[in-house]
Length: 396
RNA sequence: GCUGGGGUGACAGAGUGGCUAAUGUGACCGCCUGCAGAGCGGUUUCCCGAGGGUUCGAAUCCCUCCCCCAGCUCCA
Image 1 (spheres, rainbow, N blue to C red):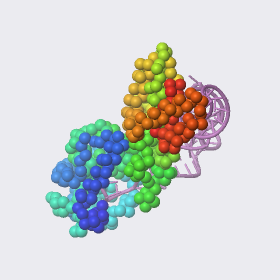
Image 2 (image 1 turned 180 degrees about the horizontal axis):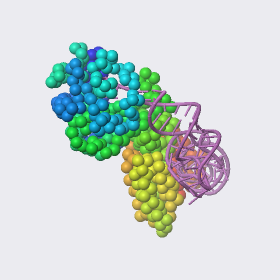
Image 3 (image 1 turned 45 degrees about the vertical axis):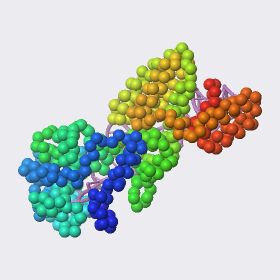
Image 4 (image 1 turned 135 degrees about the vertical axis):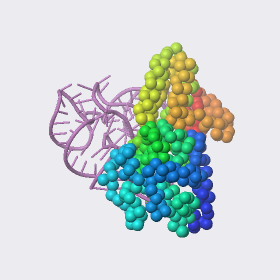
């Protein structure tokens, strides 16, 4: 980022505004709920500096040549470290990442120590004044400061990617504890999600083997993308591909077919579906309670849809209730199923008219002409389906 | 190398000691239909990386091996 800012002669903070806005737009498009507070690190410089001072006072941080380090061995003795990732200090090779220069290593009391505040080199583009001179915060610090500020010293759930299991989250936890003095655990549940691969490979900028949300949204409606993510488990490494999206699209279609069909039925006096409604509530909740097992939850919903498909003669009110239940649970998974397709199409009433004419043709057994209408409509991505309740159409 | 995750039917993907191992997709057959679509029924499906062990019983627990993926400290 520092490099890009120099090239474009922009403030680093200017540089990120555009991408952040784009991110909001895409999250909205995908029906993702946005956090109520979206703090920025650069807006919390004072808090970060104060946090470092507290940690120094509490004896967990020290200055060395203008840089402040966190004293990991001392913290480990008092509270255990790293806890997450189950690694021991001995298994870590000093400077294994190859990013720590020799003289930096020599500043540290222990190679495990990490920086809280880094002394800025004269040409460093982002720097702030501090009691220890011009510098910038270490990368674990902002998370500790902002989470405790907005969520409290202890909060329930902290999410993140598996890549943060070590070192970022253990360091963040250590900071939270070092700056608060006496809480047991700052976070009750750490939830780490696996990274997805694309076409069997890790995504990488240099390979360019990734899809952007924007380009996927050109081809697929948001519900299809959400269907994909609901069909995989957050903790399992899963593969994303156009094939997998196509499968998600088919699942979505299956649900829509069920809802559309059930809606068209007049119902009878059977009530066999009532029991399944009761069961789906239990099954869905059990699956979600089991570490958010969305693939299992999804399979239960598909099963439920199958039961609805077989329940043509159930009482109308039960059919309505079942459809509502299905929509509710898909909504929980972020998949809205509003049948907005028809209203999207201009001239829907003319399609209805064509189908009326086609119906007359079929009555007169003039199938060649009737099929011509159907074929021409399908060429325009309109699928015609004949049912005992009459013909109906939908967008492909 | 170290640490963690994983290898399940054609494919995707649940299941972590015990009914016929979910569910979806694909393929094939049948029902329905003027035909098609959607839907329903059936088949593919006595299978769980390999070998050994524990157990009345193992995809699930233990041991050995093979393979795949991810992470491994000042980039946030």
